Length: 505
Image 1: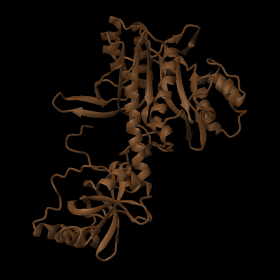
Image 2: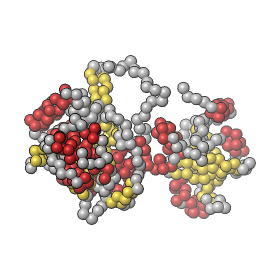
Image 3: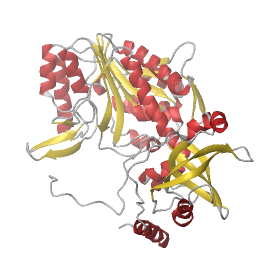
Image 4: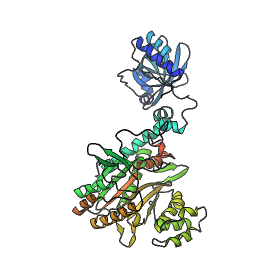
């Protein structure tokens, strides 16, 4: 139940009083002629010609001086000062301002531009129109909105009072547009694939389960679009991409949200090294497009996206040896690997008990190497056992043709050469099914239709997945994924909601 303070109740009363005066406190339409930024950019000409301007936006703090007042109006491009004075506008509109207008209200102003004695560009209001009565006051100007839970839960207020937050999401939009421009310019076709899957796959993750009443079937919110995008390669498309949401029923952290945005693209006739070259060029191009530079600062670290010799490339085992001095091998016994890991200080040895050799090496990499990867680095040489959709390296049956990109300690992208042998893919799926039967909830299912598609023939190809939320974090210097998702997943206010009548167990 919404709580209404006396201040809120008083503002509701103002709205009621306005209606009694036949004034609609929630206007249907109002068309401005200028934005705040356009006025600031062209102020000299507007002042010289005394050209009339019409602006619309939200009133911030009002500074009243009896028969005059200054306030700032915030619109979608910034804010600009406005000035109202008795005698400079119709009496009834000045009376409206004095009696009914509060900070937070959305107004339309018609007037001319001038400079104050302090030199600030200002709109002198000759007409004032109330467009929306704000009945819930904004947070106090001097304190803003700093409670992170309130900021994420009430993002609409966060955007109003925290200018940097507004700019972050403007930048997010620019990054998405720049990514599309880059790929469209290189012949890729944007497509849309299903959000609800009868069989989930394309990644190691727990799915969200839903239910379709008419068809009387269970469906899963997709954990990845991969298997549908590769079906399009079978159908003859050679360059496809999708920027859309994935859903994974997993924990929440500064790098993870259950609902997140991914770019996935697939290129026929390429392998993963071709994709690595594309990714390096694409991220540099996006940075130049939206930031004007390929040198960025992330969480205090200076990062160069255009080093003279290109991005660093290492295998997982090389990275472990370079960082920790340990020489490990895929296929080594778990006991031998644990013995070597025991030499590393600062590790909780108990966390490494009961793990197989592959999981031991990957956990060691995650804990001790990944936090050191600040400059752009392709980490290659991932184990075949953890890459059931990737081709095996011809020279090493234990390793997949796969890389992950790390920048600023963030895993930003994942790519590999796509497995297109239907018999081997079916065998890999069956291996995953055995793991599921043994209790691995993140193992993949057997997707017989995908195998059938491969039986028609999929060309050699490479795919790429880019975590767009993490890319935005990197380019906006945000430490948490919640800061770059407009409405992140949160625990409900007031506890867990009851199930609806349509929910199936």
